[in-house]
Amino acid sequence: MSTWVLLRGLTRDSRHWGHFPRVFGETIANAAIVPLDFPGNGAANAEKSPVTIEALVECCRSTLVLRGIAPPYHVLAMSLGAMVTVSWAARYPTEIPACVLINTSLRPLAPFYWRLRPPNYVPILRLLLLGDRADSEAAILRMTSRHLAQTNVVLEDWRRFRHERPVARGNALRQLLAAARFRAPATRPAARILVLASRCDTLVDARCSRTLATAWRAEFAEHPSAGHDLPLDDGAWVAHKVRQWLLMSSAG
Image 1 (spheres, rainbow, N blue to C red):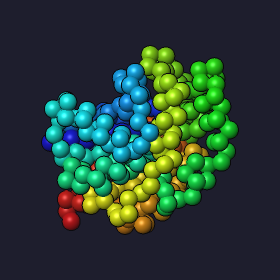
Image 2: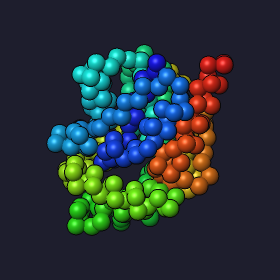
Image 3: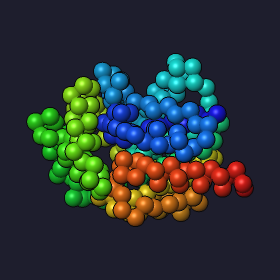
Image 4: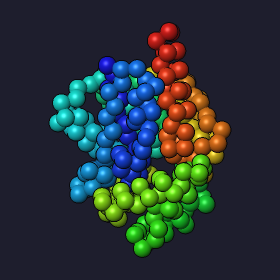
């Protein structure tokens, strides 16, 4: 049995994974799936978010210890969560033998205008300034999904998540600061790495993932039509790519 830790992005709740953990568990044999919330998000929304990726790593490790879940951990993570995974794998190489990084970006491997595409600057500033006075979840869904057939069902859930476990504006800013300050480690982590990207990601340029995969000689796959929230737009594709990668790794 392999433990798979799932980490999401900026201000997101572990419930935002939706049906993906079930789909992943049905596809990956012997996977014990553990979605985590960062401090300030989800079930931990009353806590104060750290301002560094390194501190978020320690929070994840402490949470797993408190739950009695010992390493090694496989990690599947997107965006901010993938930054945490990179730092974790670099700092504690024996704890993470393999990881999947989805639609992430790292300094200095990508310029700032790839890491956050310019058309998003004003909408994100508006979200930070107006908070719940704007329809935040509808704006986030527009920025992160390209498969909009599911919008009504997903949006209803996301609005409920925000109502039940709101993320304080200060915590959102701290997480944004942590992401902006983080730099890639000087050397590639020892873990086996699969990088997944969405060609139609309008939030983070897919070139960030392509460049990362090339620099670190990691396995890479790109979805032709999904948005930033790739597990939401096509979770079955993600699970299938991870399964293929694991089979290739075991064969090698």
